[in-house]
Structures are given as structure tokens and as C-alpha cells.
Image 1 (cartoon, rainbow, N blue to C red):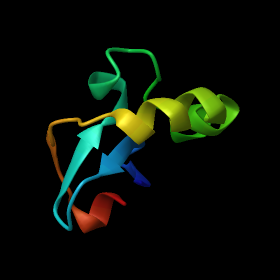
Image 2: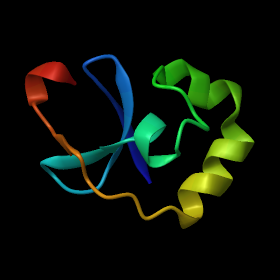
Image 3: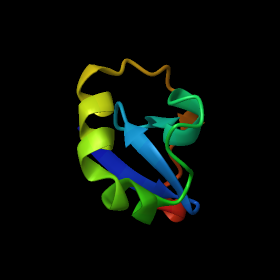
Image 4: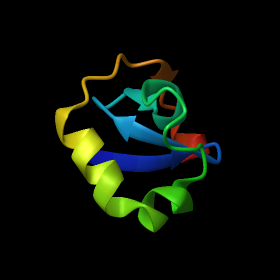
Length: 64
């Protein structure tokens, strides 16, 4: 699992140029702020271990 801050939003990196917005992929269970994932790390890690989110973000390296 690779997470990143893309333009201020937490994303799961799924390939070199694609990511999934975590708030969208989790149906709002986890917010868009990257720091919020660490505040609730155990629940996030459990969700991320089984999640198969559709990539909905084109990674722009200028926004990382």
C-alpha cells in the first residue's frame, strides 16, 4: 500500500500515474486530510488491506 498527499488530499497510489481518492473510495469513512489517516491508522490499514478502489486521480507530480 502506498499513500500520498496529492493536492492536499489523501490518495492510494495504484500505479505510477494513477491513484484513488481515499475519501471517495471509502465512501466517506476516511476524510480527505492525509493526517487523519494516521489518527485512525488501525482502521485505515484494515480497510486498505482489502480495498480495491478504482483509480480516479491522474497523478500530477507537481501536486505531490
